[in-house]
Image (cartoon, rainbow, N blue to C red; front, side):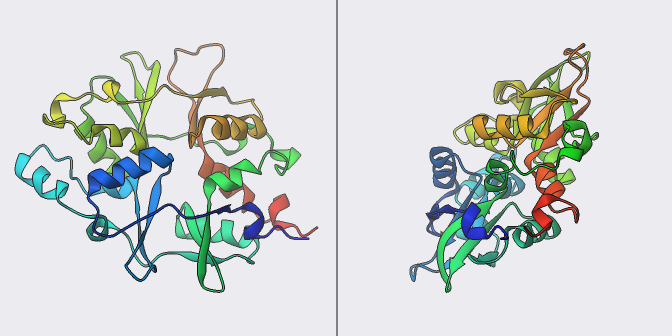
Amino acid sequence: MATLVRDLMHSGVVRCRPDISLGQVAKLLAKHHVHSLFVFNDEKLPVGVITDYDVMAGEWLSGDSESLAVMRRMTAGELMSSPVETVDINVTANEAAKRMREDDVRRLLVVDEGKPVGVISVSDFITDIASKIPLKREKVSDVMSDAYLVCRDKTPVQAAIRAMSDSGWRSVVVVGARGRPLGVFSGLDLLSCCDVEETLESVLVTEVMHPPLMIGMDASLQDAAQMMIESHHHRILVIDPEDVDALPLGVISSFDIVSEMARPDSVWQIST
């Protein structure tokens, strides 16, 4: 029997009102350790979604004090994306995975007879992936991304934000002068800058980045998935175990694994 959205989704929806400030959005994202909030109006209807990436792309952390003040007054309703992408609770999981890959979205609001009942996200697929990965493509090297966004340890946060916004990448690998991986700067790390009073031109990525997760290219996808689940991380640096101080070989993300699941010969695409 095919796996359905109801089998993988997590119940409940982390939501907010459209009139809350971006500072409040940041607090809710950090409190619930999520990458997005669904925005509901007074009629309790979903009208949009706001993510940590939306907050970053809004360039509200501009070095210009006047524009920074304007962006800090913005609300979730002004910055949210709409309409909300929904999926029926009885749709198959592989259909949901295809939609997420093709539409380049990381989450869908799950509805049951039109009523929001939960969310299915990349993380939900990862949670169940360990026992579903085909044995013939079981290594990190089979699905990792060989290209990734990188910056030096002396890079200002503001410059990293602009690079992420321009390239569409959700994180930057931070390395030392000789390429040694020092950390990763992501959208969630950006939230820690919300209360920074001085211009971000003086804040370096090393001050807000998080320590990197690292794995060898010959490790199994199950190991990579389990590492993501336990750490609540969406990406892991792929390194050479014999030279851990060298420039990383690549990056494997939760989205890489979801894309693998959507392949025609994946176990997720074959009815049982």
